[in-house]
Length: 339
Image (cartoon, rainbow, N blue to C red; front, side, top):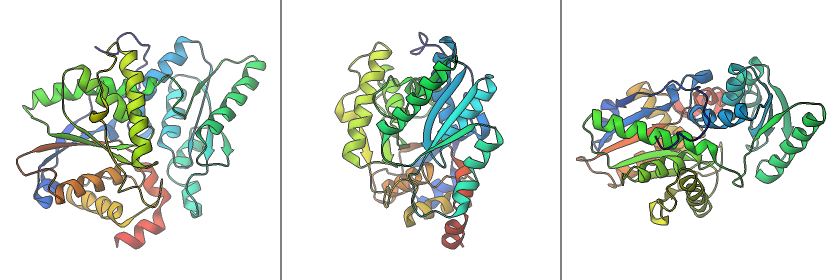
């Protein structure tokens, strides 16, 4: 096991299912499409963050932390699941909401993830800038200093790229899980498609696959920053992760595939291809995608299929990273577009 030397707590229901999307595959008349159901990790409605938090919280518990601090967008899946993980482990938790998505209606601030955050009783603060990762992290560390002065032992899960990427270890471990499932199903996989934002999931999965000798391509569709910036972030994170697990240099720059054509007009904002992907997947498979992450990566997968990147004799896996509660933050836009 590549991650055996790192502290970990059990938070996720794993292995998550690997399911064939028969109806969607037929509808697109392209490759055989499977879905890795990481929306089913079980922690407070599930999602990919559960795997990542197992290692962050493992490190926190090993260091005797009593309070977890982290930051994210108003409809952040990471914040929802961090609160749930802290509550499960009996820890205090404080989260910081960033204003990343402009011109939203009240439902965005009251429904979905914010509703669940308040239900679980987290202490919530606000950071007014949406695109200032280092500033947001600095605010967390200032609050951590206050907690220390009061006698507490805080643990910060940072947002910016300048930290040890414990979260990526969750997807190194997921790579091992996937390769075993592929073997059990006798599958030859031609690509894995996912959303790429913090880069933790893509970098961890890519590193895990390469460390285990697999050359399966990983296709990341950008949900926050442009293609050049995201490619650099994924590659740099992969270098850190590969060093952590003793496989330094196993990922090369040509392994990193990212595409930003589904990002417009920005993080957490909708476009027609995203909406079409949400509708098609729901109506074909009863599979619910979110507007920020999984919807945009499914739109990317559909683009690759309809443009002939994948052919009918190939097999593709869509990594469903969860995020379903965020659907409830977009009721007026989804209703008007999907009816």
